[in-house]
Image 1 (cartoon, rainbow, N blue to C red):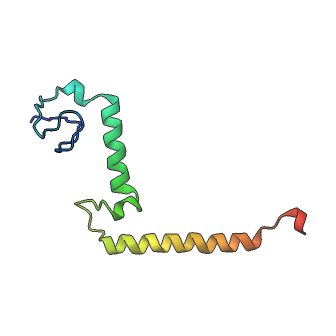
Image 2 (tube, rainbow, N blue to C red; image 1 turned 90 degrees about the horizontal axis):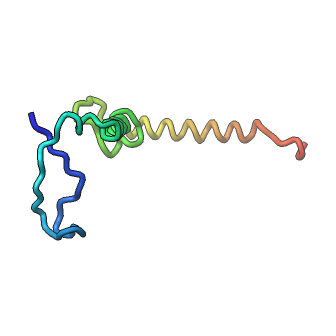
Image 3 (tube, one colour; image 1 turned 180 degrees about the vertical axis):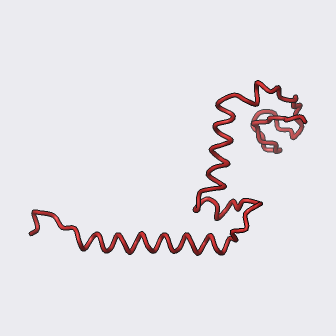
Length: 98
């Protein structure tokens, strides 16, 4: 299996050379296992797979948790946060005002 790493945008509006053609060489195992590359790919994977707010836009392909269920959970979390904030605001006072 070969992996081709290209960290450049392929479009006609490319600032570097203005063409869509690019020569890409296969990556070696040492290049694939660099800390920077592994860390960034795992970070993106974790955020898209496990973060409730980001998974609204980038739904994991293998998940049975539908987008409607994700929106419902996000709305419930947001409303609970707002309700707890309102309760906390009324319960906590400053010493100068009492």
